[in-house]
Length: 513
Image 1 (spheres, rainbow, N blue to C red):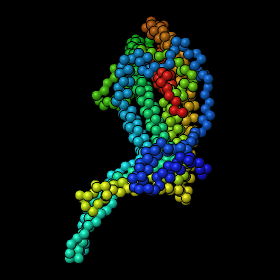
Image 2: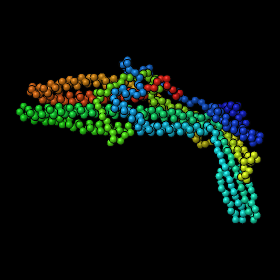
Image 3: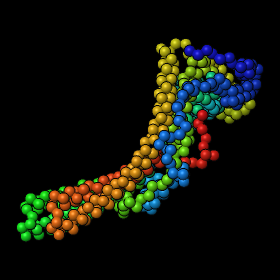
Image 4: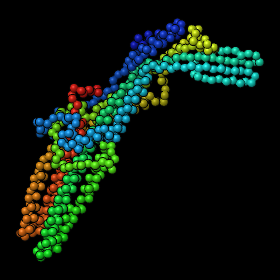
């Protein structure tokens, strides 16, 4: 248990002011003053429970040394840099209609409401009540009453026969307030506010994840369409070679083995078409869900990965990532919320002071209820100090500290993971860009070799094994080039996600610390 702090003299003076000295009007005035000043005097010992972060922040990214000098930081609508109007429209639709984003927005509403719930104990409560009761006592021992609320009582008599009547009318206002000397309620409010902040960053995380998933799914559709075109072109080339071999077989210059081998190669290309059509159809259906549409009513025109350009972007300094990544800011807000939760659990060890003031009117006759002589007032000051609760408060404090430690380690991991994500995306983008250039040269050389082999086959100056090898090399090289282009586009979208999406202007950033 923490050492109890010293309560300031002004708080003891306030306690003396609300004691029931003097007449009812003075006591009622004292209660109102105490209830009015109480919120300003609350939380006077609220301290700091923030642990040491001990973050390792590098000066620069290792893979960013060869960045283009004309590269800029990510803009807010970074997806426009890919140069696809269809992708831009899909991104806009996802931000408006994505259901995961809608769920995150609803969670923000809940978190804001929880802030109001947590802040309500910091304000006085005022309750109005009114009651009217009529009781009859006689030889039949019958009684009737109706109750409209609690208050003070008045009496009246009955007539004859050993019976009596009892009446009471009252109306009152009760004000109460818990003096938050130790900052328990204030800490709960601050924890709720930080949790609400975390929910807003979670909405940004969900939004960024949704739009990156839209981009990746769209790129996969384009790549599958490219592979489908390449496969159909290769199938046409294989069937053209097959027809030539069958002609040679009919003339006796080719064997059945040659025909069968070419038929197998053409069949392989033909069998590769259905899986690609499955990939396109399934990705379109997945994309429809991402933009909040029914798959049956949704279509994608598509295109080619070769027409998508990759925007040039600089990752900036690693220290800037701490403010630009929404998941880091979310982890930071959760850590701050757990810090205040520890303060709340620690303040629960100290006494709780409750102030209650009641004022109203009482009378045995309704006509005289609101006369000056029917007025009454009461004041109550109570103090409750936990003595033994089966180690409940100690366990709650340990639990709060455990959550604080968990959120601290989660924050550290989020920071390190962010740096790692940027490094991996930079490396992937650089290497896949290089591989695309090299693979394009392979495709060009393979295409030349295949064209020469086909021409020589028609002239009868080359064997079929060489033609088959040139044919298979070209087919493999073209499919590999499509896959490399897809990998490059996925690396680009991963880089934007790793950087936290579009960067807000530096002047608008506000630290949560």
